[in-house]
Length: 267
Length: 267
Image (cartoon, rainbow over all chains, first blue to last red; front, side):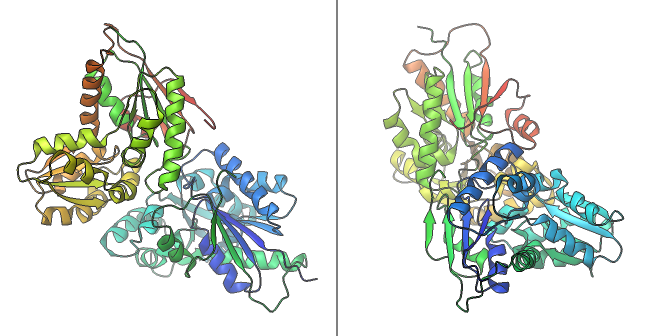
């Protein structure tokens, strides 16, 4: 049965648009309703309590907008709030952690996987738990990289500064001889080239955005909720604030101009 | 007449504790009530509307806590919200812009002053307006430095990364031959050493935190509202969230441990 309801996607800000980009590419007929919590970005340095509260508010907002599924396109919220959100929500809620972990397990040869993310994501050990739940023999090395989000938003995607910062964070992972690296933050795909240049040759980079899009497709297919229409789906974007340089930053993540953006104050 | 009411101070996060540190040093008998909006930090990339709304809420909170004056220890809020706050508040409201601009005018010899700050502060041109209001012959060069706040919070206060980033931002100011540089963000005093090492020799650095403390003393003295007690004043800190690494970051800014911190949810 064809289900024309939109997929709900949210993130602390605009980084989750990398997930939207992957969804649009894999499931072009699906409509998407996106919420970027730009008034309260970033989540990466907030408490678990606050992240859970915000995530519940936004999930309720997406359900009100008739979403058939909620995708938590934010590693921090996925790491700290997913279990509670799944209990809270009457519709399925998917995070980015498990799909990323699953792809990493498929990719590794030496069973040593690296993870980079925000302080909150890394401190939560959510990727380690997911990886060990899938395969008890996996060794992990993780690194919090708090400067990579501002670096991506600033648009310094190459050059001296980007290379120096990324090299600083990746050196211990290179020393540990990981062969697979999970980009555990939706901002990091923008820095893929500089990350690839600073990580040991042959290391596989796992982009959670692409991984979660495949997981969404599988879940909707399993529940017979895919949209079978031949028409291109619509993208509706809501944000909680229109910050400085909003359009240029948004376009950088989405890979296309952001049209029809609506501001929602105090959801 | 001695006035024992506290001085209210607020910032988007913990950066304003550099202003508290200067106030405690200059006016040790004054009590201070500090509000750090850690749940909604940073302000530097938010819209003017939102920054004004948050600033009004916090000013009302400080007034409820019997403040005799409100110090906006945040360059972004001072730049975008001070005029409205002064109209809104029944007690005096001081920002950091005018005191910093006044000190810079005193310091310059060649009448060419540089300003560094967040995107919001620099876009507002608040320092330029303040400087030109004081002296129409001043030439200014300004530079937004969005990576310096995360750099200071990360504690990378020296080394390759700090030097490369700071050098990138300061190069155009060095080329323009400024002789005075306003550190237009309360986070930047932490980066004073690396800034001093990357700016042309002989350039005077203006730390708004010290400048605003002197302005507060003058204002309280003029209105006969200084606290004449011989006892050391109390510092009471409120925050809107207890984020990751809160204590270590707070101590870095305050220069002392943060005791008796209370969390206020949804002011």
